[in-house]
Length: 110
Length: 113
Image 1 (tube, rainbow over the protein chains, first blue to last red):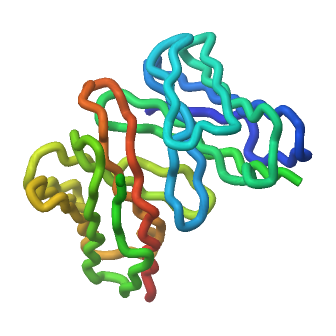
Image 2 (tube, rainbow over the protein chains, first blue to last red):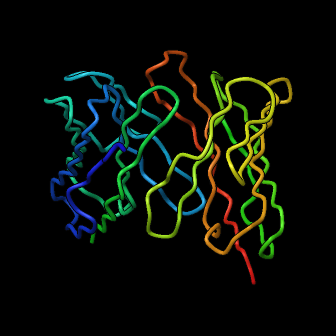
């Protein structure tokens, strides 16, 4: 089974801090994604990557950036955290029709 | 605009059958998939329909009608462990290996004894 591991389950950060969310997958998948999940809004795509050093904006990229230096690792960066970025962040990787998700990082910005 | 519509909540008793409908309007369509998410857990893949018709996987079945931009997930012989949120998702990109999905807001299924 694919394992997608997110480095933190819970994070609390202050407004204005630079925040790094890390994600690692162990199945050599080329495609990786960052979603955020908010009640009533489902999962919204922030960024995705289809190869090392390649990235594409999703539906809500503002205030975020990403880094993919190695195939197995995809990082989400909040350049200057704001309270409206308090959310559940889900990393995922995919092969063909199936997407596998990590357990999520619940980020609170105070 | 792009949208996927599904009911916000469905309640049913153990042993019953539940159908969760999903209608979609997206920029591209290359398949409809369904995910289950328990409270505090990660979404997990349930099924995928690229072509019209019914796909059955154990107690769960998924249906697609591309001409109607409509699909549903059917949960049979409901069990308490089926209490979870269920999301429909449309694959918008044609490349086999890409997984760019547009998700619905989710349907909370509550199973009562």
